[in-house]
Length: 78
Image (cartoon, rainbow, N blue to C red; front, top):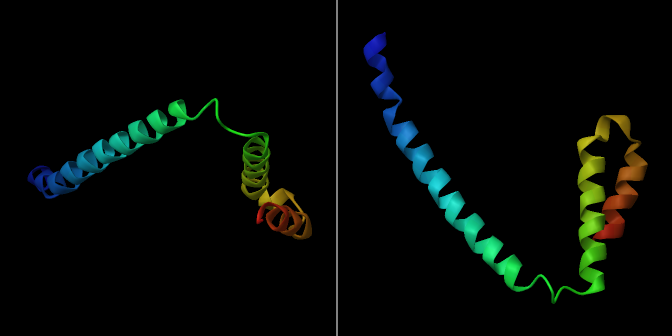
């Protein structure tokens, strides 16, 4: 049983590589965001706020009416 831990070693190596790639992609997106932080227009801010509100509503979907969630999804898809 104790020696079977080596069966999981390839998975751990794969996970480490995947996290490293995610870190690289995160750094790329962060640099891109920092470069364009002062050029974002007012409409982009409104879209971001709407997306956050939609995410919050979808997380609490059990506590919300489905019709209300439908209208929020429809209003952000422009």
